[in-house]
Structure formats: C-alpha cells, structure tokens
Length: 183
Image 1: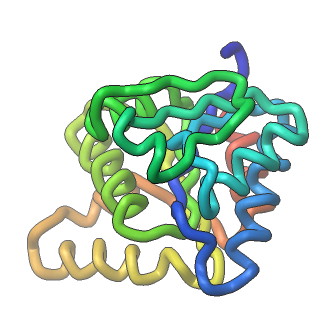
Image 2: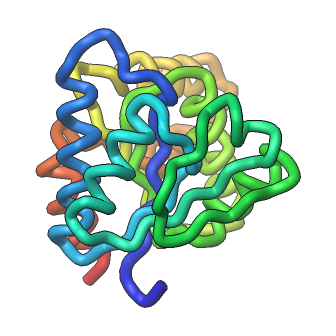
C-alpha cells in the first residue's frame, strides 16, 4: 500500500449517541488527510461503514477484509480500494493484523472487544510491537481499562500490560499520535 496503514476496529452498529458516528467520520477523514491508509472489517454497517466511507471520500486507500459468511449479514462496503474475502473470522483477524502499522480502536461491542483483546494478547506474547490506541469517545474505553486494571489488581496480569496500549481522549489526539508514531 505504500502509506502508513491503520487498522480500525469499531462497532458494526452506530451506537446510541451521535458522537460515536461523528468520531468515526472524523477518524476516516483524518486518516486520509494525514496520508494514511485504512484497513477494516469490510462491512458497510455501523461505525465501520462510516469510517470507511469518510476515508474513501477523502481519498484514502481503504482495504476491507471480510469473511465470506459475513458478506450478506454485514453487507460488504462497495467501491473499496481493495476487498479481501477470507474463509473465516480467524483468517480475517490475521489479515487485519498483518496489514497494520498501527491499530485505532473506536467504540464497539463484542467483536471490537474480541479483536482488541486478541491484538493486545499477541503484543504481550511478543508477536508484534505495533501501536494500539483506544479512542475514548464519551468514556467508552474506561470500562475496558478498568477490566485490565482489575486483572492486574487480582494478580492475573502484570502491571506492564498497561503499556501495551494507550488511550487517547479524542480523534484529533489519536491522529496526532499516529502522525508522531509514523515518524
């Protein structure tokens, strides 16, 4: 792809507050404005579709990765720069990881939690050292951070786990941090 590729994990629903949709649109547009490409789950639904649409509309290279069985349920995003169809969720996640230079996590539900936990676990196990940024729209990341803190406090994780990711309060702060990380 040539440019700094950011894999975005986020909801396949728009969320209950319009601030989530605004953040998704701002992130997609901002990635393009910063000359970064976007990699995402390939669906034209929820925050996924909004982020990809904004990135594409602003001129970014956008790669969608969707498992064949989800093509109808999530309705694949039309007109992407590149669409990769996989045979399973596991293959999808491996490709989302492989194409990423960094990860930006917007609000989402179980799928977003799953992707985030897996990418953090891989980092903890030394499988990568790619930046992972939680975008804390309306405090969305706080329960996630609290869960990690609870695991540390109860002796199930080392306190170094906190260093596997960072939390940024806004899309603007996230884009500035991605720009800094890109070097």
